Length: 389
Image 1 (cartoon, rainbow, N blue to C red):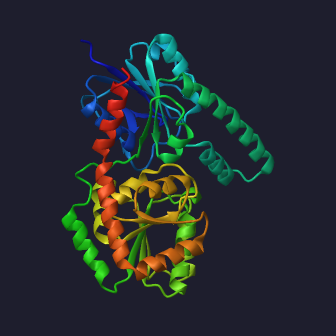
Image 2 (cartoon, rainbow, N blue to C red):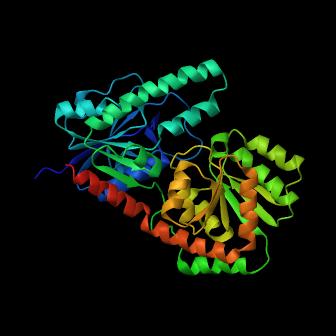
Image 3 (cartoon, rainbow, N blue to C red):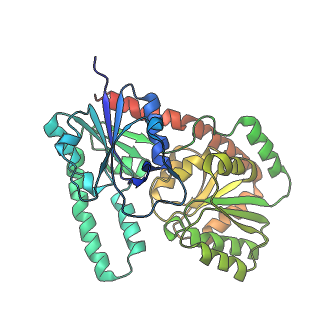
């Protein structure tokens, strides 16, 4: 029997250097997990980027290290029937407007098609508003988003299935047949905190030592990075003993450093920069952090949520639709209204005063992440694809 051939068309680009293609690290590691579990062959179709390579998180494997075939298209080169005709099933990005014709291509070629979706119309609109100040341009872009959404839903109804990352997308498109809910994470069973390590860390909460807060991610407004330092300022003014470690880089980094200096927060807030995810960041979070502060302004299903929970760390943050959906199925954190900085500070003060409650939710966080490890998630997604082949 012929082995099934999976074609993946991601939304991420590919770069090239003198030795060959350069992939985004998260994408490359994800395809590695597909390759470990998929019982056939894999081809990835990516578009060539004209931009500079990322400073962090890129991988340039040698030809012998590649475990999938690669087809590289120019930015304007159309995706054609020849690209899908040999596939058993195609996994396409529903967030990429340039791929909304893939389900039609597959239908004509007699090939199964499944879309992956993360963003909802609400999230797209929120991102657009954060990035667009001109009211006329906002109106034009709103019309563009509305038009694209009609085409997206039409494409989904032609497809054979959909895989929704996070509860907002799952609820938004649940009328699509063969709909699957999953939670994105890069952490496998080896990276999830062990019970002994968690209980050792929880011993810290029994004393009166300062609560250890943290954030990791891109330092941009959509991720609420500008509100992090304001939370720290208000906590210090309220006399709450704490430390806050901020991991990552982004356009707001210098502005945040200036804020820290201006308000004399150096004794309690540290800008830690970018750490290697598996080798440095995860071990440090597991050992040194009690509570994660996540002030995302948009409702995208950031892998930050599951990756934080894998460290046995509960989350306090804005109750966007993605975080609200998680709180609805697991007791792993606390939510405040969007942009309610005082509400977040009030929650942190309450958490600091009830550390047993914090310890209980730390245990819940580790338990939830074990049920949704990277291996479990990829196995679930591949079983979904195989059921349709």
